[in-house]
Each structure stands twice: as structure tokens, then as C-alpha cells.
Length: 277
Image 1: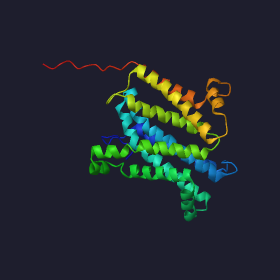
Image 2: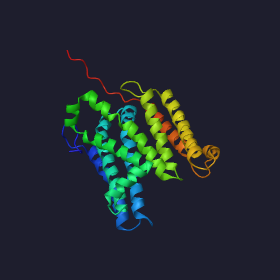
Image 3: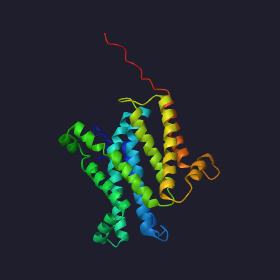
Image 4: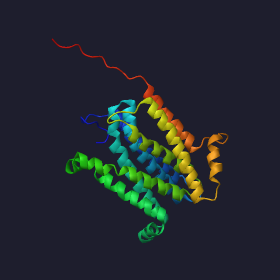
């Protein structure tokens, strides 16, 4: 059962997380039931379910940094649960999109082949399906530890594809895709600088926060320069003006500094037992 720990005992921590993973779907169902999804409910539901899928994908990638920075090994037990939930929301995303097309699956397939952002999204879906199908203990035994880990490193390019899909379908307002892209840059940067089995030092995490914020601003600049008619320099300058709120680059920097602050917390020491005679 997903709410039990490795020993088979009931885990309140895992049970709360398991219940929380249902909350976005329940809120979406409630909005659909009460007709509060706006003038285009199918499109709104498609967008919301897909957004939550990407959020959960990034959350699953954040498990390793969280476990190492907080020095809490049990956090690793949430990775599989969150990963499977991510796939469930991806499938919900596809089903709702099909519903918007009156469940005409031939038309759905045609749209996926015709529109590049849908093709990219569908490739990401297939990748997540492979990861979900091999998330069981039996799959780990069949593939072997090293083989299973190599396969599940596909989560990195899958996340990149999902972010490209999200950005392309968002069109003009790419604030959240840019924020997610910046957080993904931090997560990938963390994996590059983290020592084997532990968290990076505080100075390294501070440098990573600055680098991830700069990368976010660069990604946003490139998007507006290449894909829109908006002056990218104006967008870049907006990062220095907080009158209308913080830009994605600043939020990513704040998140990175938050991780560094958690790393700076004093390590809890456990009392040693006296040596036996």
C-alpha cells in the first residue's frame, strides 16, 4: 500500500502526501461540477491537469535535493508515489483533451501528428508511461538496480520535453512555464554540483541559486526573442522592476536561496551510546 513504509507499518507522513495528491483532481472535478471553469471548460480543465502533471514531475525530481539538504532519508519513499501520480495526471490531461474533441480518437491522433507541441507532449507521455510501468519492486528486480536507474534517468529529458510542450501551448503568457523551466535548471544544476550521496556546500548552493536565476532570465529572453514580437530586452529589464510583482527569474533565485538557508541549518546530532565492556 502506498501509505505504508518499507517495513509495512502505517505511515501518517505518506498517508497525508497520498491524500494530498488527489486534491488537485478533486478541485478540478468540483470546478467542473459547479461550472466555474470559465467559457471554455474543456480547455481550462486540459490546461489545469497538464500543469499539475508538470508540477508533480518537478516535485519528483526535487525529492533527492530535499532528502539530502534536509537530511531526511524517509523523503525518498515519496518519489514513487509522486511519480505515479504525475503519470495519472498526464493521462487525465489526455482524456480531457480527447473529451474536448468529443472523444474522436482519430481526430486526437491527427492533431497529435499535425501539431508539433502536441507531438512533443505525447512523446513525454510515452516516456512517463514507461517509467510508471517500471515503478514496481518486481520491475526493479527484473531490470537490476543499475539498469533500472539508467531507465529512470529518462525523467530528465522527459521533463525538458514536457516544459517545451507547456511553453509552446501557453503562447503569449509563459510566466509559469518560465518559472518551471528555471526550477528545472536548478534541479539539473544541483545534480551536477552535488557530491556523491550528499548535499553541496552552502557557498555552492548560493552560487547555484544565482546561476539558476540567471539561466531563467536567459531562457525567458531567448523565448521572447525567437518566438514573439515582444522586445526581449524590455522583458529582461522587467526582472529589476518589482512594481508589478516578481518575475520568474527572481522567484527561482528566492527558491534557490531558500534551499541554501535550509542547508545552513545546524545538523542535528544524535547521542552516542556508551561503548559496551
